[in-house]
Image (tube, rainbow, N blue to C red; front, side, top):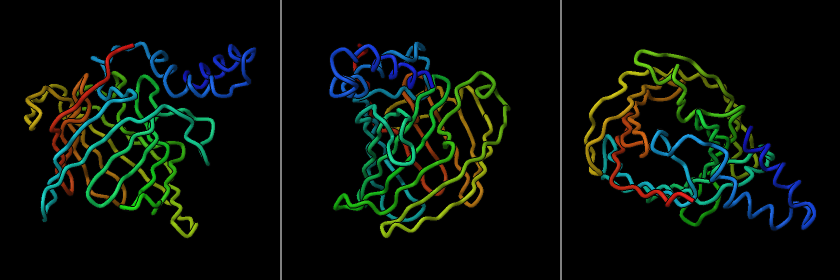
Amino acid sequence: MLRRSLFALACAALSGLAACGDDAQMAIDGGLDAGPCTTPRAERYLPLAVGATWAFRVTPSSGIPEDKNSTVEAYEDVGDRKTGILAFRVRTGKLDGNTVSWQEDTCTSITRHREKSLDLADVVDTDQFYVPDKLRIDETPAHTTLGASWTVSYTEVEVDSTGATTTRSKDETWTVQATDESVTVPAGTFTALKLNKTTSGAADKTFWFVKGVGKVREQGDQVEELESYSLPPLP
C-alpha cells in the first residue's frame, strides 16, 4: 500500500510537467522500486529488484532435468482485474514456455497477484488472478520463528484462451520447519529458512529461502535447486 501512496505522490509532484504520463511511467519502471522498502536487501528472504535473475535446475520425479530462469523485468501496474496495484513483473522461462507473474513487495512479505502462462509462441494459455493475493513468503517475525504455523485463504480466478473463467477457493497452511538449516545446491552452501506449504487440491511443497539471495531450493512433485543468481547494484 505504501508503494501505491508513493506513486500517487509522484504523480502529484509531476503534475506541473505532465499529468502522470511518460515521466510517471518512468517512475513506476525504474524509480519507486528503489525507495519504498528501507529494509536492506541482505535481510530480505526474496530480494526482488528490477534486473535480478535466478537460474534453477529442475529435476522432475520422472523425466529429464531442465533449466528454469527467472528475471525481474519491471515494476508496474498489474493491470486488468488488478489495476491500481503496483508490483514487480517476473518472467520465468522453461523448455515448454514462459510464465509472467506480478509480485507485490509489502516490505514484510511477497505476494503474487497475477500469473500468465504462455506457450512457446508467447501466446497466452491462461491468465490467473489471485484474490486478494497468493503468498510467496511472509517475512514477519511471527512467521519466521521455528514452529510457527498459519493458514491463508484466497480465490484463484483463471481465464483460459477462449475467455472461459474458472474460480477456485484455496487454503494454504504454512509451517516454519527450520530457521537456520544448512542446504547445499549447485550455487553453493547456504543457511536457510525452511518452510512447508500444504495447499488444498495440490501437492505439498517445501521451500528453502536465504536472506539476500531468495529461494535456493524447492521440493514437491519436482525438485528445484539454485544454480546461480544476480542482483543489480544498489541505487
